[in-house]
Image (cartoon, rainbow, N blue to C red; front, side, top):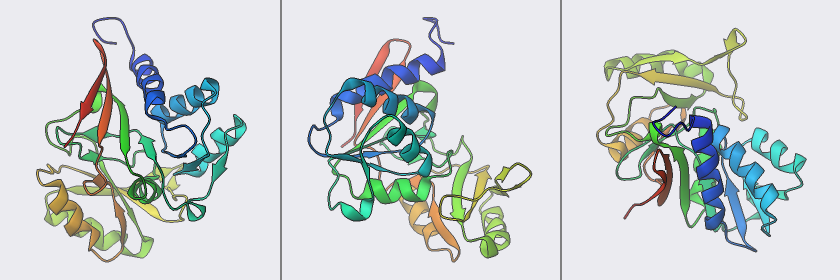
Length: 229
């Protein structure tokens, strides 16, 4: 709880409501994944805003939107998305992010790449000076996981397979997630380029090429709008 008595959950609600102003009526809307996005989905359904349809980054978000009566179409049916709205595990002063805490990083990156504008919604705890405080998610092909763990160790990171109910978690794509701790990602673009080339990596959770254009940051003083060049 911050100094004004607002909980992290309440800050998420504030930024979710603020994101409605960035929805373009009559256009396709990209929708991400996670607890903050769930609040945005709820706010969108209650708002009555008229969108052509939503394009979702995960099965979970799709199911939530359909249950609330929001239209959802597959990305393969869409050539252009006006705005993509999603959360982040971390965001720095240039709009570079770490994403994938909800295990949807591959589809998030694909949808974001097709959008004209990326609006990140996050509470102030997600803002960092240098990426790497949150474990870095990396979606990987299972047979490559042991070698990739060794490659991250050579960089100074400690990677481990994400677990669910005592077994390796599987993404919506049927792959596994490595969570890497101990890294300081001072060059997000270079890091994303390098790790993306490693055999067996499906997607690295650094969003540098698909960085945020705008961040709606929930703070004790209200919602701050950060715009990145």
